[in-house]
Length: 446
Image (cartoon, rainbow, N blue to C red):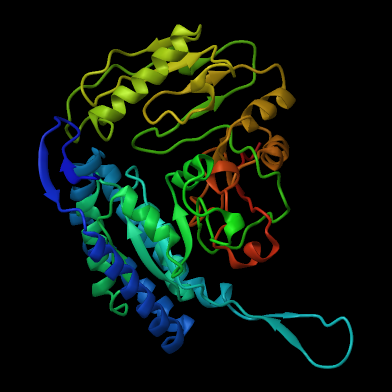
């Protein structure tokens, strides 16, 4: 049975528990969200909904300290990073508040023959189920809920068991922003209950940010796409992608990173030998306070899992440069080299401060290594020549590609490969069934 509890990852102390919903409570939540959809879609305009989304952003500003404190307690974020996440959410909600009407406006299309006119109208789908991860408790919700509420869909959200406090705070924000009752509903549901919710005909799409939709599909449990039930690994936000050409829907990004937890950071560089990341490592940090640059993983279990992944690669022949040993949920930064496709770690997301470094003979091989992964959410490219940045970014198979790491943060991003096995919520891209890539560059003036 799934347990919703706040456990301080720095010391393993259980701070608070939240009761898992009964089957009846979960079923009631689905019904309320479905009823709210009929009211939201039929009685409000895009402009009115966008205004409410903007109010959600304002409430994030007013309650940033409370949200940040919840994230620090639940997943061990450094306080400054937690405050930064709350502030970034404000920008995301403001973005959709300002642009939703333009994104969802009717699009005239040319007629093949005859007089008259035709337009493409964008309509909401209904109730969307969001299954959110622990690593960015508020940011992931903002990317999913903000644009979809503006579009007129309603949200049923199952957050990570580590984040029940953040989940409750976010639900209250949407209520206080004056969205109709049950337009956004949080549920403390077990995995088994979520399986049944996915099978409910009232659920129109599933935004499974954990990739669970992929695992279920491989096991063969639950309804399959062939049976007519929608399944999506990441119902991403509405956006105007810079590149909407079809891409191969199999492999993804070669350099994955997140901020405070270094989540899934996997750097692959061209050259004859590993460079600075291997030779110079930060000293291990094992204390939780605002002055430290490091933070614990979300739980001791997560640290043990990462330790097993790294140890398995080393046992199979990889090398590891490490700044220390694991202590509880604290994991010392490390850089494995010599990881081969035969190693499980090569294909895995390493959730922690572990950066795999791969050598490549030239740009062609570097791109091939970068694309040799089952994931495709985001990629980071570091180079000096602007023409190389554009050329390589065009070849990387990821939902978003950022060059030089100093460019603007995307308000949204699509995704490819296992990060998006179904469809995304970019209504235009969904119609063509192609994947989308957003690329931006911060290029050196030289």
